Image (cartoon, rainbow, N blue to C red; front, side, top):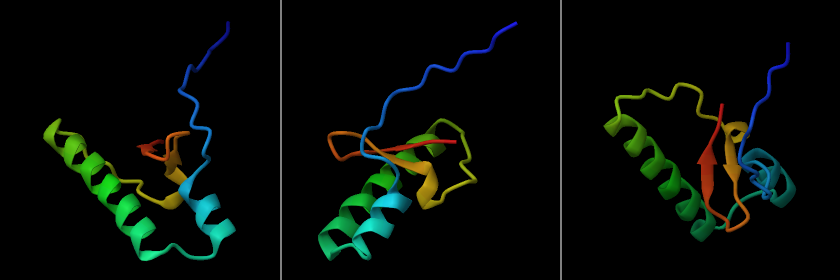
Length: 71
């Protein structure tokens, strides 16, 4: 009768909340996050996966500052 989800903790929150808190990213931050997103999408594509829900709310930031795609 029970269903459990086990997910990795991303203590940095999501990109949407970070952007809302900061107001805007510096050029260096924008390049950093966008390059990580492109690498993640390239990896998914190499595995034959199409990611169709890319939005700041689905980009989680780990404690080390790197991103993980969710949803």
